[in-house]
Structure formats: structure tokens, C-alpha cells
Length: 342
Length: 236
Image 1 (cartoon, each protein chain N blue to C red):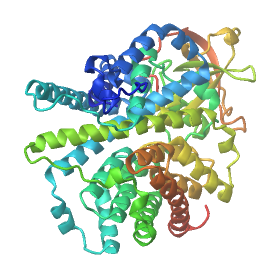
Image 2: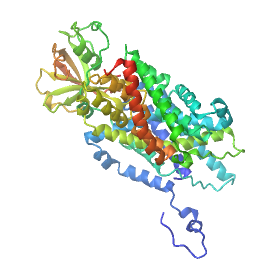
Image 3: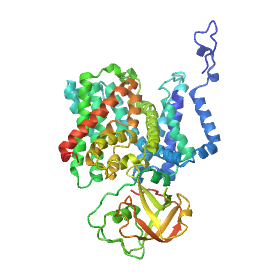
């Protein structure tokens, strides 16, 4: 909106503009929709390049696939805001943060979703007074160690129950180490203030109104970042050369690094990544375990969601450290559980 | 972005999810078992948007406030428009030949030690994944000398060869892994349209998938039939 020249008596230019003459986002939205409808033909023609078409399909697929899980997350978040008083959460959690971290990790086993669901829930937990270290442990544990993901891993790797155990231990270790690291070194000012501020509750509003409003607000604010993540994943999916995979046969160390990067770049749902890892049968087991542990902890979609929920200052510190910690935990559990560098 | 605009966006997004669930094009993006979750998500998003709109309108009527909700969630919600536009205007098709030639060949996972005999009948229809797994791993030769039917789309390779391709997904199209069978034994294969769906009838060239040729079996075509694209474009 262009700033109007301030008239001598007007406090703000806005107060002088009659409401029906302001251009709001609603009008912009209508204009965009009309334009898109008019430009439909040239737009479709522009997308008729094979690579762009592949990218567009992957983009829509990531969004469509992740949306139900995000919705689950915002509903849980809304329920917590409306029905769980902060005092109840604090009673459940041990008083010291260091002890609260393992409890949060165990609680992560109970949210049967993928990473998109856990971001809004853990932000809500922080707002309800849960220490950030515990909420972040929950954020990392929930998508990786819940029963659905573990069963999917067992199905994808038949006859290799050690893979399931290794994934569970590696992911849990990542979540706990990150929680304790945050408890020791983390600073709450890295997290955007809006993420920690408790929405003031109007006592006249019903619990249902609080529930729907919170869920709606969380959906709008994280949905955009989910789309951004899907877009990044689609572009990289098309751009990453397939020869990366072919060159990994038999190379463990290079494999660990490449598979870790691939997990970040592909941004697969934690319920599907085991099947992809299983299909890369030329790659040794250890790098594939790294892929499974890193993916649910750091990927482009998740970093976008975290940036939206906790701010850029948080994501730029948390994501790289998580990446390194996840690789170390995965390699360590892999060597212990899978028995060496296979 | 204003609250009203956010609500309109949510209604559009929920509508888009319901639309692809309703007309079946969701199968181009995700596996069939995700349908109930997709419908629930669409309905919940629609409901959240509509409830909020109704509440705002009631508030204006009651003069409880002025209906002005400058709720600034930043510009990120605008991105929600992208999937809405993509679904309603472009409706990207299922992945095809481009995705197959883009990813490197994957050796199918060995599913069982002993493969059950093929279904009886002159030319049983096999899933591509079943065919390729048997071609690579089956030492008992259950495919040898048997006519089978396969369903897939045409992929023209860089090397001038023509393949029958199919994609296998575990969850959504982002995790698709390709399957390829090299078509042979017939002239005019190279003039088939890329991405066109075919039902081919023929048999495996024994041992062709065991060698180093990227584990791609060769298939001697005795008959081929262009068919419309199936409702479920992926194998699972």
C-alpha cells in the first residue's frame, strides 16, 4: 500500500482512508485468482517441459502427502491450548530440565505422525510453559520413534530387525543429546518471541473457540512454510544428479556423508523414507541408517517449518547442530547395533 | 495477511484436497490408502476456515468489534496459494518417462527365496515389480519360456533403446523408484509415443537381467496394445 501524504490534522494516513478504498490482502488474493484463471493456458504451456512437469508433480505430492499430518499436528496443538492447563503439564514433567528431556523423548513415541505434525505441537508445548529443551527433544523424537515409523521400517527391511533397533536408538539418542545440549547451551532469546508468547486467553471465550482459533492460526502460519519446504524438495529432487547414488556402492564414509545430505535434500516423510532406503540396495547399511536418522531430524521441509515456528535465528543454529549430532548418533549406534561398517 | 484472506485461503486449500480425493486424481500423487486421511484433512481445513468466517461475520453483526483483524502472520501464508493453483489450474499428471530416466536404476529388493509358480493361463498379467524381481533374483527360472502380460508406459532411452517403465511408490510420488524392462523383438518400437501406456505380451530373454546391464531385463515382445492410462498409475 502506498503511503498517503499526511494531512496536517491526521494522525495516521490509515485513519483518513475510508475502509472501502483500502487495498487489503483480500483484494490482492482476488486479483491473483482472476489473473491465474486468465493465464491458465500459457501457464500450462510453460509447465509442459518434462523436468518442470516432474517437479510440479513432486511438489503437489509432498504437499498433499504432508497436509494430513500437519492438520493432525495443529489439531493436537489446539487441543493442548484449549484443554490442557500449563499446571498439568508441569506436574507431569520432572522439575529439573535435564530429567524432563528423557520424559519428553518417551512422550514422542505417542504421536503417530511425521515431522510436520511435531513442529506445531512442540511450539504449543513451549507456550504452555514446557522448558524449550524438553519441547525440542519431543520435536526430534516424535517423528522418528513412533510406532508407525518403526513398523514401516520393519516392513521395509524384512529379516533385519537390527535396523529397526538401530533406527530407534539413533533417533532417540539424537533427540536426547539435542535436548541436553539446549539445556546446557541454548538461549531462549534465539527463539523468536512470538513463539514463546502465550496467547492471552479471553475468559469469555469457550474452549471450542480457543481450540478452533489456535488450530486455524497454527495451520495458516506453518502451512506456508510446509509449502516452501515442498517447493525446495521438488526443485532439488529434479536437480540432484542420479549418478550420486550409483557412485556409492561399497563406499561407507563417502556414503554416510552423501546419504545424510540426501536425507536433508529429499525431505521424505518419515513414514516413507525406510522404503526408499531399502530400495538403495547398492549402498551399505550404515549410510542407509544415517539416512533414516537424519531425515526426520533435519530436512529442507522441516527447516522451513522451524523457521516459521521459532524464527530464523533459531533454525540457523539448531538445524546444523542437529545435522552433525544426528550423523554422529547414527554412526555410533550403527557400529554398535549393526556390527561394524557394513 | 488479514484474517479474512487467510480464511478464504483455507477454504480454497481444503476444497483443493477434497477435489483431488473426489475425482481420484490424488492417485497421481499419493498411495490409495492415504485417502481417508486426505479427506479428513480437507474437511478439517474447510471447517476451520468456514467456522472462522462465520464467527467473524457474527461478530460484525453483533458489533462486538469492527471486523478489522489485522493479524499479521507475515507473508508466508501466501505460499498456501501455490498448491491450490497447482491443483485447480495445472493438475500435474502422474510421474512418467522423465522421472524414470532421471533416477538411476535400482536393483529390486529380494522378496522371497523361492518364488511361487506363475498363475496358470496362456499369458498371465504380472505386476512390473514382480516381473523385474523374478527376472533378477529367481534362479529356478519361473519366467523362462512363459508368455506374460505387463502394463507400463513407453520410455525412450538415450541409447536408442525403448523401455517399458513403471514407478513404485511407498507413500507419495516424491519417493518413487523406477522399474524398467527393455523391449525388443519388434520393429517400430522407437516410434511409439513417449509416456504412452501399453499392455505388452511376450517373454523374458532368460538371463538378461543377471548381467551387468543395470539389472534391466530384456523382454521379447510378441504383441503390444496401446491402452488408456490406468486409474492407479503407480505400483506399491
